[in-house]
Length: 134
Image (cartoon, rainbow, N blue to C red; front, side, top):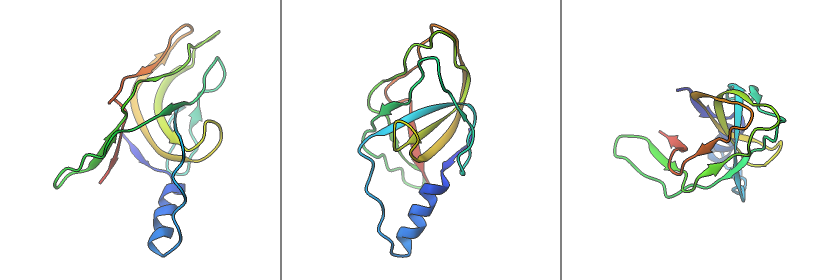
């Protein structure tokens, strides 16, 4: 699985290291779905239309692992709207954003492909969305 921080987030960290104030944390985080994966610079093709909307996501405590990556996982189900009147296609990646529309992508990751047809509703169960820092 490919994953990464967006250039926006990488720049925030580097600027902080050289003494620039780190921006305030977003009040709410949102997960978006892609039919073509993004990369660090953004890009990709986010789903649009057919009742699609980014959904808010919350995370639990950070888990620190000796000699391993630190992680945090979602602590509630994320339920997307029912795809209507048409499907959304094959979802290949997800992005974590600081806004429900537009805004900045913070992290992204490819996922196991899932096809959303008309009438389908995607649920990401609590604990199944994880952010990793190594």
